[in-house]
Image (cartoon, rainbow, N blue to C red):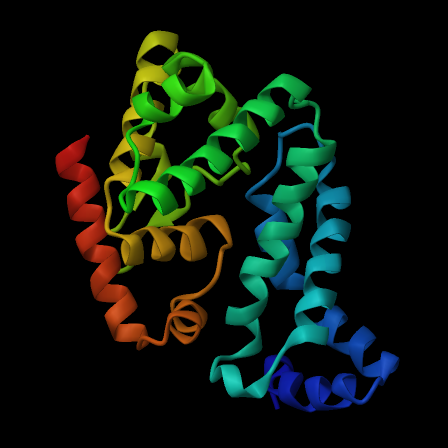
Length: 239
């Protein structure tokens, strides 16, 4: 029997509070943790430290796994392991987010929610900035500073036609283009339909699988996949 085939057995025991089963599951899935941690090397945290942080994500995945998700454990665990490492790099990494940027980012999100409820439509970034008294450049900087780190090799969308985040990023040697393009991307996302925005949020901010996103939105995995392709097409045209 292959090691990964024992995951369901371990998970059932873990649900009953078996710590030995938890230790066995973590040990037999360390290859998955190490492969994910490898993607985040050279970001100011030692590789072995990233592995240990990834283990925390795996333990959370093991303790929260539900067989009704209709997915294998490794698929469910990947976003939790990745998210744990990203949170560490964001909160404890060498690049600290200033209080001003955090406050501005929070103000932007709150104003967006207020505007959406009052006007019944998504606001333009310029409208948000005018209402809270900051410039579009300050808004772009604050939102970029508080965004969770993402792997440049990470695919945006599914299938062979998916592109990586690296392909969407502006030239790092041109700071003006960087700010402008980030702002343009956020404005393009703000112009999406509410359902599409929810999909973007759940898939790329919360790092949920298509299956889990569909469950939360009451849609099938196939529907989520189709909507993602539409979203990518819209964003490509907008940018």
